[in-house]
Amino acid sequence: MTHVLMDLPFDENALEPVISRETLQYHYGKHHATYINNLNGLIEGTQYEELDLAQIVVTAEGGIFNNAAQVYNHNFYFKGMTSEATVPSKQLVDLLDRDFGSAEAFKETFLKTAAGLFGSGWVWLSVDGSGSLVLESFSNAGNPLLSGHTPLMTCDVWEHAYYIDYRNARPAYLEKWWELVNWDFVSQNLEFYSESRHGFIDPCNENSDLCDYVDSIEKVEHSNT
Ligand SMILES: [Fe+2]
Image (cartoon, rainbow, N blue to C red; front, side, top):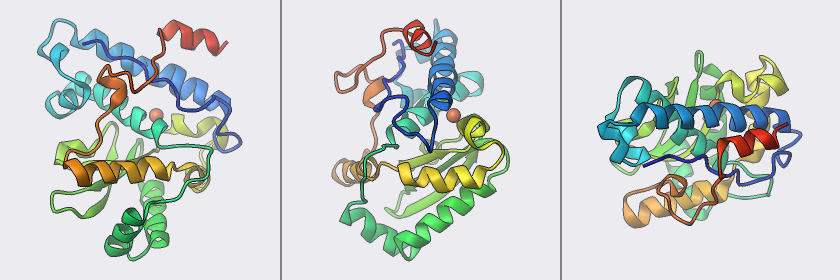
């Protein structure tokens, strides 16, 4: 199975001024695209060639894990942002109240955790095995699938996500990034979890027609020039 670069669910300049076109050109067009290329090259001729992305994430190690998890994480991150105004579903608000005290307390904890993560990594809201919402931070390509959790939302705190726009000011990036959270996506992930107990399935890497595809990496790079 060849993994493909998802199409961005928004125009490259749609998230400005919070995230600039230039940041997306590098973050999506270069970093994300490179993880895809690396993954396809590394799995060629191996047992991982037959597995879907999530299966690779939970079974592989080393370079294959790193690149597969970075593809999964970036798919999740880009789909989790929007310039549209969205709000969490009642189901999500009720669980945030139950497990964090309030939606506002959740925001505070999420942003504090993301600001405090040492080095590069990811912060995730997930559902654990008992059905509770949990906040987790992982270094590098870390991912809640490894602990058997179902991911609902994530924020990328690698410097490549914010350095062009905010330099080293990660807390400023996080405060502004919060305005872009696609609560419809987060709420839908929770709804899928509740209904199927399977949670997020990545349509872009199941070769389904639910997701538009970019024809080639070259096309993305061309559009960035
Ligand atoms: Fe990233």
